[in-house]
Length: 304
Image (tube, rainbow, N blue to C red; front, side, top):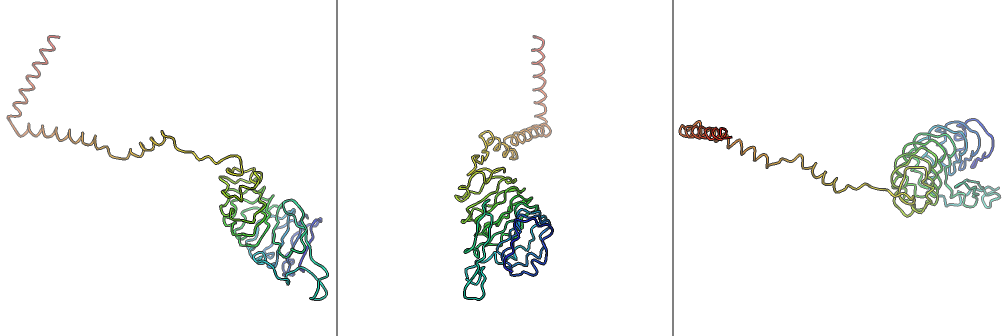
């Protein structure tokens, strides 16, 4: 089995492990808009030929398995005719060409003749949580990644720029935080981006690619910079603050002027005391000076 499309029904229950065990050559798995409720089994990673995984609008929960990078078909391009999704009674002509309806940016698009080139993952409108695994960035040929309307937390994978074929990213309405990775500005094929309604902060990476998107793509965060109207204001120190900083910086330096005054006083004082202790003549003259000074002060006081 190459394609399994059970979308737009009322199916309930779990995603069975045997789907991955029995259909190892499956390229399309579409369970969109049902009522499936379970975590994603690790056995799903056995679908190495999987090119399109659409589990949107269900009740799946838990985390994305880290073995998601086992989807080797999402890491290579298909250009050979042997990869065409067509069927016939023999190998010389085709009686039926596989087609698939996929949702991209809110619009239903039908792929048929170029279906073999399409690579996409849509896990939107479920109950997934925790961090987006770094392993997803190994899917270098993935063109569409929709994880919106879930409960993903923490940061966007820093190495998302390695997914060089991405044309569509929708991480809106999660609880992602931190800065937008600078590497996202290197996605030259990116034509649709939605990071709205998260907890992202700081400046949007500067690039012509990102500044060309509508401001609504970044709304509901604490971001700044183009294309948003609010600029990132970096506080600059005032002159007073600079002077205060210079003053504070000099507080730890020794003030040699006051040190010299203290040393001069100590040296002069002890030099004077030593001269009185060593020379009897100096002691006699000093006592006469004190007596004469006392007499003068006494006469002045009596006159007053």
